[in-house]
Image 1 (cartoon, helix red, strand yellow):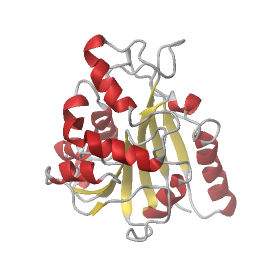
Image 2 (image 1 turned 90 degrees about the vertical axis):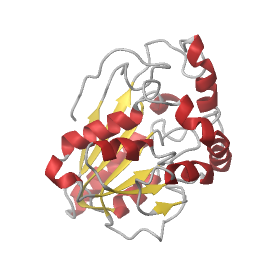
Image 3 (image 1 turned 135 degrees about the vertical axis):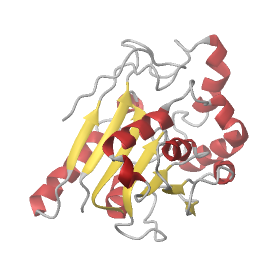
Image 4 (image 1 turned 135 degrees about the horizontal axis):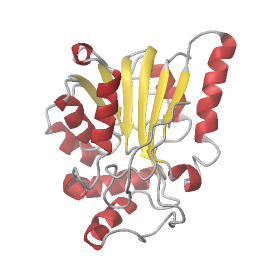
Length: 252
């Protein structure tokens, strides 16, 4: 095991708001929320999730456009903060659950150039290809099995924005992340904090697993691995569909 930093960026819901449902969703965003919900339905299987994204692919960028969904911009902003301008075009980056390539678009804007994509949905990959931003494309899911096409210690950084959720990346995907990111590399995960409270795969599992990876690494003395969580309460610009207010970074 070896990896230096996990950076997890979250947004929180209003206190007392229902976990699942359309309460607090503006009327003009209802259709888009519904399309997104189809890919996160409670109990959805991985294969069902992939099919749902493929069916949605041609309308995804319209439904989750900047302003309505800003996870990719948040990811790029934090990565740009972490890496100086002069090194960004030299870093090998893997965009996991890359979708239609919105994260790559935002990373390219701030100077990152060597970006590969991992995405299980063929429909989403077809849209992503048209951006002409990415290098190698992997049509595979993270966390189901070892990805032999990706060498150990292959990437300087890995980013996931919008790839966590019901039927999405399982907790065991962290093991593969640790394998493919270089010693001293950084992982950026952008997700909704609420998923930790109702996505069965993550409840009481995701953060403890991350913490255990750190303990194991320190215990065997192989690496220096740290976990940094940036909590953003009701992050207004994460998604206009449900979130409000400001971001408050907390380092742990």
